[in-house]
Image 1 (cartoon, rainbow, N blue to C red):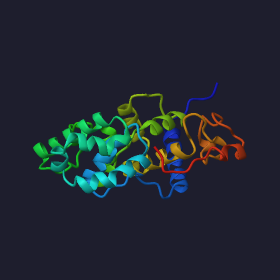
Image 2: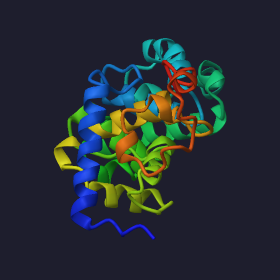
Image 3: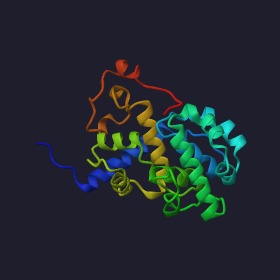
Image 4: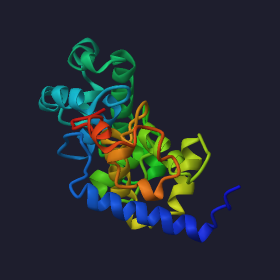
Length: 234
């Protein structure tokens, strides 16, 4: 029976994984296009159950037409729905965007707040969306616990949790706070490119010596390289 990993060993392994991911993905970044906090907030709401590539096809038209929170709050609902329709769940997303914008106008003078406790009070904005905005628009460290993040942290053997908030807090104790935003990008990039859900490219992974899930996917380098993907991604 394998010996249980000590807390110190876990922290060291987690930070080594982070360093290797940093070397592997030196250009990791948010793959949603935006020019200001409001644009990123809208784009992140649209990205639910949708690829970043599709969102980036829609937002140039959207951002040209709606430039302020007041513009979104007073938008013609049918017109807004038509613009974002291809992102899926467009009626619910329209409700979230218009509700979020109205709340910004009512409570924050139309500006996107730079604090987690305020962002999560906005319609359609949970911790994941809030951390995306904080980390990428305000430079405030945050962990973006999406499906890739959850899958990989479990595969790495860091935790057994399925609750996103508990995962966020636990991983936050393993990775230095200053690294949270970039670590989120790196792990999401790795999940999209190599460690995918159905068939991870284990034989092409730079983390093989550190990952207890090695062998979940093909370990033959030639076969594994065929599974490696390139962006843009969901």
